[in-house]
Image (cartoon, rainbow, N blue to C red):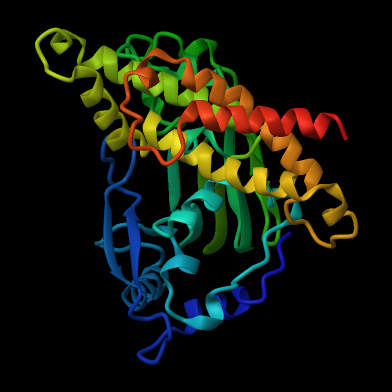
Length: 360
């Protein structure tokens, strides 16, 4: 459980937000849980104050509203808030401190994968797996959640006759063998009841569907590190292959077809091969700096920061994935002449660092 110095204030703000609320004018993303848009819910944006007013009215209306069940999701509270005392809303649990996704996006100062979710009883998240096949963790600050979790591979039996995954794994339509021919072979999900103050860890590639059983506030992070970096790289290769299959009929007639595939991939997945290289580069540079300082610097270092042993492990995983990326035919088609550090040079530096570390 993370230390949450600011979250009691957030709960108080959530329940008592009025015209003087410090966060009242912050614009937050809100999903309509009662409307399906592809395999998700449509989102709108409103002020935090307006959402809290809606939430109170929803409760007073017996958990019903003509506006539907609205769920505040994917709120980048730490990044987007201008309130200084919310900059450190909580302390990251040591078990999840090796967090490359947020390390990368913090370095660019444009985004992050740290979220606050807040919604009434009955709000929910449709069936999905997390972005980039990252890990995720979720802590309930208040309220309860029910998780339906499917280990990797079990989702395949839930695909419909067109190969698409369901929006809602509890929907009766999944019993229709004509539409879902393999559903009878599906295994029941792992069901987890998460109480207030409890944390759920979701491994890479586990599809899940989540319900708020009470009015609930939670903190959620997505993250990648050396342990699941290969999963992320495998996922990105699958995403590119899916794009290439989708527009394969234009391969011979479309100029720069491979480049367009990368553009479409980034639009759909949030990252392409070029940006993945820059992700690896930023993570690698910090590890190389740490290893260059030697293990004695960190011998008596307190706290969970990046130490020599962790950096050495990270470099070994970076070498594996960067080697695979550099030799991938689609990466070799990318013009790397403008890169500040050529991929082969970075790989050589990482291998040298590995050799030096092994000799210690």
